[in-house]
Image 1 (cartoon, rainbow, N blue to C red):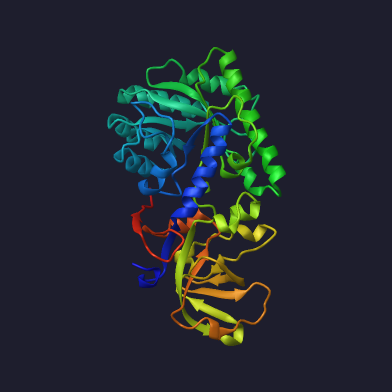
Image 2: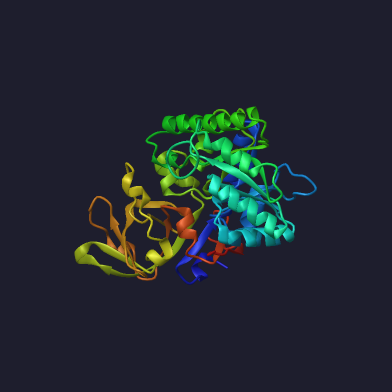
Length: 384
């Protein structure tokens, strides 16, 4: 099958770029002496994730390696594919604890996340009522980006003590996510953020241990900080996910180039509005997502960069606007487009702003390896 045989819009995955991105991250994290626990929320496909797990250190009980998930549907799916070591890296909601217990009964070594004494009590009490012992990490706020306990906050020890040594719960360690790295203006700023992330979680791990509490896991992670970090002293694992695919937002941060972006959306030209200097395609926001993350960066990429069938960017063409099923291509600088170069039926590929959001619009990857030959179709899923 060729790309030209597909109905559009369709999600295309370049296997060569995927493998290169994974190998680069694995080499970097290994050189820092820590384990990579890939985040699977973007991939949502065992065909993709098994490549990120290759070479990952494991144990007989935890093969083929550990993953990070953001939904329990992800946990269900990857458990069914033999992955037992699963970190659910979103603050636990009480109404999900019974589901977590079900996964544990099926063989999952689940670790959950929380950041309050109230949540710790709920987890411990629910675990005792269900006859299970939930393992938990305490979330650390290393950058003011989201949730978590700030370093030095006395509530850290209170939470640790409420989790530790109870029939329904146990403390496994600490984790943080430097989400504010996505707002960094340079790779130097990302390196500084990576050190801030590391120092915050290591300080909290030390405080727990000094208080006689266990802290086996010290977990950090975001694709920008994982890519740029220079030290992981005191850290046990790194979580990152979008590095497998990369996207225009990551390129705007300087952690990759457009040539590293493994995902694209195949689309067809369906018309023109010559008086407006527009090319109309069949890939609107239902195919690309509504994500406009690059609008705040130095270069606004609209809804995506327009490429030819070989995934080479075409001049300064971007998807400037979208409707539900229509994409509107224009020149970013307002220069006229030679419409004869883009006849109705021509196939184009669009590099996405946000790989997670764009992939979520599709149920499968059409896998290529540099050439426009579809060598495989890998299923993926969405939802909760």
